[in-house]
Image 1 (cartoon, rainbow, N blue to C red):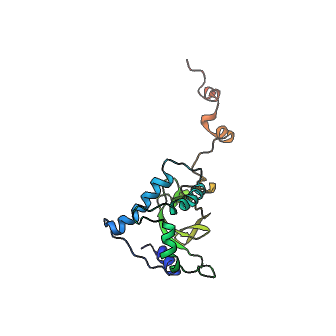
Image 2: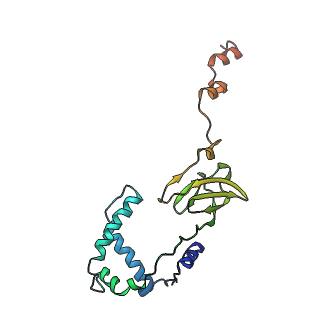
Image 3: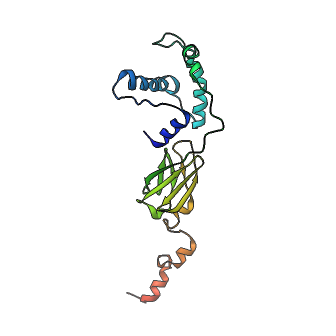
Length: 200
């Protein structure tokens, strides 16, 4: 079990029961719910952002809870009210403390590390090196040994790239007039003609 998930369950008083693979009454039953959502809630649709997908699912869940379930032959909302609502407990007060977790990552060739499908930049000198990442609620902090080498605001929408332009300084050759003027390649051919004189 992932340590962060174990701590979360401990805080909220949740007992975790891991499903055995290839068992219809446990793992199969859990996965069938995922397939139901894919086929009935999001199949054939596209969304401009993760927030738009979440908003769509909020409305869809209300509709799905009112349908007659194929196995129980009753509405999920009615079954929940009759058999499960009384087992719910109030949310803790005050709020739970901020949780942090440390993970190891190898810096990719493009100077990024992947955290929860979001990619964060790292100084290019660390490409191919292993780094330690402190993932908090608000920030992602990257360490090389004991040295902090990058800090980013944490993003929650998946598949984003969070880049600090300073991490790429020195990778690309500058292409400006000053470089061209100081480069031998940028000289006029007359300079070379003057050096070798008249050649028949």
